[in-house]
Image (cartoon, rainbow over all chains, first blue to last red; front, side, top):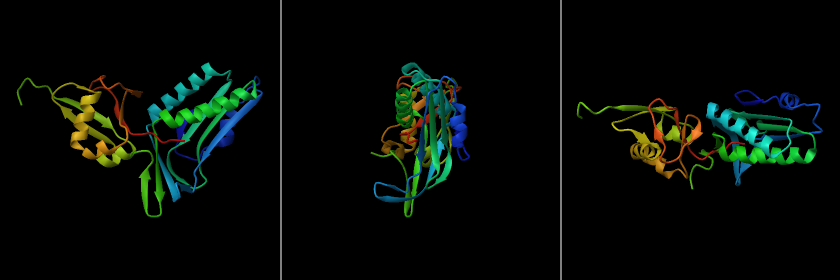
Length: 136
Length: 87
């Protein structure tokens, strides 16, 4: 399951999608909307995505992870649109025969997603807004 | 403009801060000579100087990050990629 969703992410569906009889572990990363960033109070977030390329890049990351670790299944789902504090922004689930690989692969997937997948986050504050990372 | 000049029309997909700077999510750029990634970015930065303020600005061609010297065809799906911030 690799997709961009404009509706709330069904975490259980992500987990179910990586179930495997060969798996002894499922590691799940859930990214949520924080109410502050660098001492600024965040009111809400807006995610904008380049859907076609984002899904392509997430699929490439899943394939790369399969080369690096012994993986059964991978799920990656990212939200788009307006999110409130506490909402789930991203879910990554990885099933593996042994737990060490699931921890490592899941961390690599979220770290690399943040670097290469074309998704943009705008933070809305009480008194303004900002596209993150846009300016030096 | 001479009769031999052939206009090339490119459609640029814009997201995040680049969409806000340009004011549309798809911008039509007409050039009278073939473009590569660098010349395309040059034209856009000339028309929209605020693009120069962005920390880094990449171009995706057909959903793949493109090299600066990569040629661009009007039929390609082109997108500006400002710094990503997913997760």
